[in-house]
Amino acid sequence: MTAAEALAALRRTLTEITQLIPGSREAWDRNRVLQLAVMKLWIDAGNYAEAYRKAAGLAVGVEPWSGLVGYRGLLAHLLPEDLNPDRLWYDVNDAGAVLADIDDGTPP
Image (cartoon, helix red, strand yellow):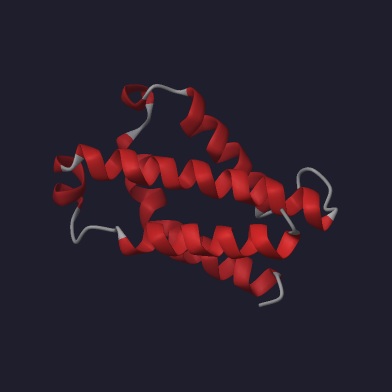
């Protein structure tokens, strides 16, 4: 995967997350399937971020790539019941800001 392909996939994945944000926390809390789908998309975002970092020749620890990779690891290795529901709600609402950070720091 080239850097451009990984970046395009990352942008697409973050956009998909933003499209899934429910209108309220109550709607989020009631929809377990949506929560699991969003967790999977965040895992994908972390994988694409790492693929981009490697393909672009960036050092480990460079933001925002390292944050996405770290969050991927958290979501991938904890049981869903062990995750903080407040953090998940915050992060799903932060996907647009993450996408803006990536857009600001990379070529279109």
